[in-house]
Length: 305
Image (cartoon, rainbow, N blue to C red; front, top):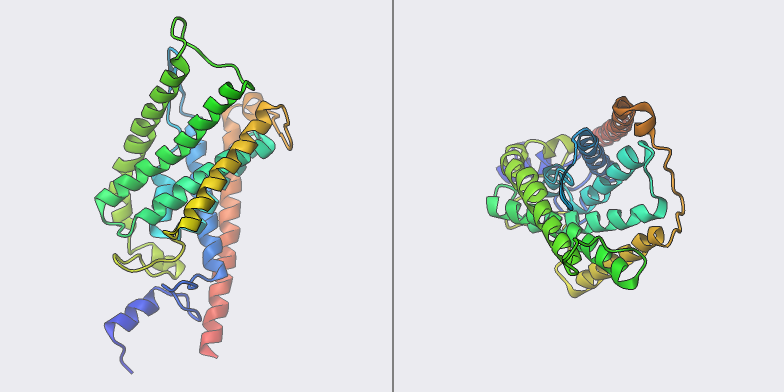
């Protein structure tokens, strides 16, 4: 029996035995693969950053905060929710924890801020081939993440739990330094390692990588799974999460180092210890791929029966 082109397209974009492209279309193995793949790739990107030296010009730190295009690619091609959940966890597990620089509960601050930034940015992109949407999304990641971080830093100084880093002769320099740092992050992380590689990489992968996970590519004008709802309750929730991240940031400032793990493996064993994190990423990815393949085979057998 022949099928229409539309029917064939939907079947090509689904895991056998379940619907795709609908509000509840993602199955547990697909969610797991998106989560783990995002976690592994962003973790690997941050490992690479560990070997790139930071550059300091006076009181200003000129460095790459993160490779924005890596998690941006994930949230624009797959479910923004599950990809955004996984990416910041990859940094915490594979760089902070395994490298021996884990701040305990204080890490939740950065996790929540990056999750919000990626989730909102991924939901902006309705058409992964639209260069304007990709550019806005890349800048959105940096603006949300770094703006929340700057507010936390200024709040710590205003409340008095941390001393301000002033430039001699310029009492208002804390605002100036935060502003300069914010601009540097937008240019380096948002543009050089965000917009430019994303404009090339995302359109190339769109429509090619999603079917490997049994997913239909994102279609312009159609709803997609995991997008942030454009409603007042989501805005309120996002604000609450942002405020909640401030609490975890103050834990470290108050010397409440719950769950801290800082043996400093890099300082003790050198940069070669980074390969331990790479090995951990490969193991986690291999396990996830194995579970996904097993679930896919079970679905195919159930479909035949």
